[in-house]
Image (cartoon, rainbow, N blue to C red; front, side, top):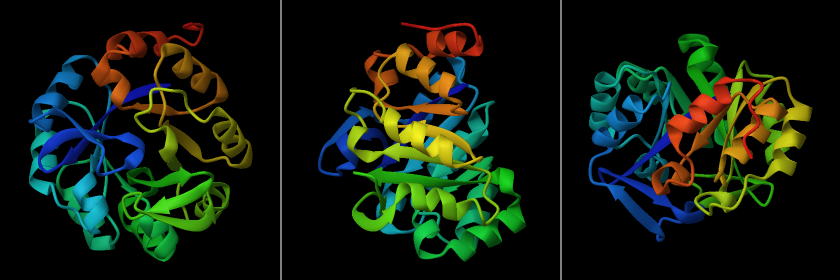
Amino acid sequence: MEVIPAIDIRGGRCVRLFQGDYSRETVFSESPLDVAIHWAREGAVRLHIVDLDGAKDGAPVNTGLVGDIASSVPVPVQLGGGIRTLEDARESIALGVSRIIMGTAAIEGPDIIQEVCRELGAEAVMVSVDARDGYVAVRGWTENTMVRASELVERIETIGVRRFVYTDVTRTDTLTEPNFAAIEDLIGRTGLKMLVAGGISSLGHLARMSQLGVEAAIVGKAVYTGDVDLLEAIDALASPTESPA
């Protein structure tokens, strides 16, 4: 299982939002580029970037910074946040990222995601399934819908998507634990590859997700606070026999 560090960008800085709340922001670095280079040197095989300004505003904002990161690190970069049109998707890939992540569009315009998959290839597209109390949240987690996360996963499986990112928004940056009940439920419902974010705070959490069949874990706050040592986690999860406590 891949362990992918997250770099969330807001106002040009590397930040974390507690439970996705824009009013509860912690700044971890003034330079997301420096953070990206650091994680690549620490052994990250991929970086997960979220343009929080773009997610909230409805269109990519920090494109220059994302392009600088993509051209400065020797590992693939995946990008989400405000990508809601085919043109947004094209421009994001042109920045040098290897995968784009679309969330709100999966609810408001699934035909757009289908079109993006056809043009850019399914391997270059992921859907973000962001859930609050089991229901999908959109527009940078600022609006709730009446669509269950499980329903959205079943929908996207029919439009050419091959993988999705599941985030329990209520667990994000809490350093509690992932929503394992929801993770197990979703894995049992779909053949899509699944990435998970939210609540991860120990090697044990990562090991359990690996055993469940999760393709990759996206770790945010825990790698910034030191609750999870990135290099140690990557080494531990590289071995299928490893079961960290």
